View 1 (cartoon, rainbow, N blue to C red):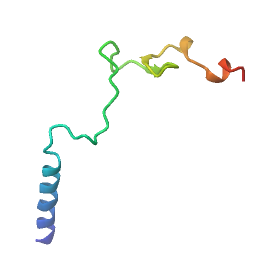
View 2 (cartoon, rainbow, N blue to C red):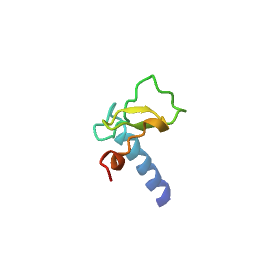
View 3 (cartoon, one colour):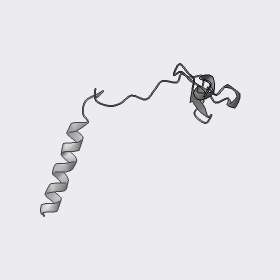
View 4 (cartoon, rainbow, N blue to C red):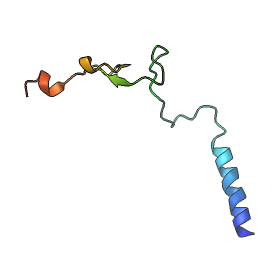
Length: 67
C-alpha cells in the first residue's frame, strides 16, 4: 500500500514538473541546419562550425603549430 501511494505521488510529481512548454534549464542541441543529413559523419572545423567529415580537411592543430 505504501509503495502504491509513493508510486502515484512520484508520477504526479514528474507529470507536474514537465507541464511547462519550454523549460529554460534544458540544454539545446546544436542546430546543424538542414543541409547535413543525420546519417552522415560530421566534424567541427577550426572555427567550431559543424561540417561534413572530410579526412583531407581535418585541422591538425599540432601540425599547424609546427609541433
